[in-house]
Image (cartoon, rainbow, N blue to C red; front, side, top):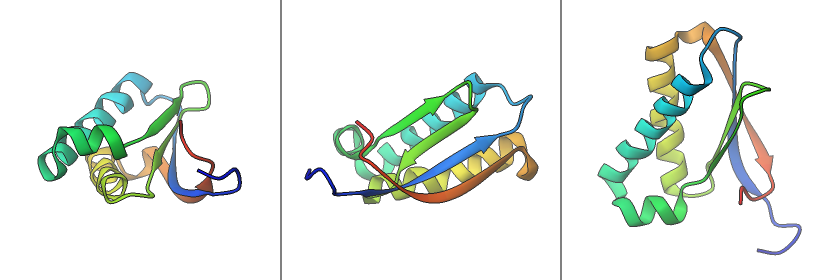
Length: 98
């Protein structure tokens, strides 16, 4: 990718008291669900995320169809698992998640 090329992503900010290990497990389930739609190889190639336990954030790439599905599924899972008030999510433009 060119140095100034950007990609879409969503950043999830979880409140204190939400166990980051549980958040990561929920995210992995969202990736597994995406495998049911796209297959393992495509999810491995097109899925990307990063976590910051100290900041209680998860950032998931949304520049591909895989990423869009992962974000949609993760959002629903997080609401069901942790509650609507346990996190916020915002769309952002970020540098590529390598």
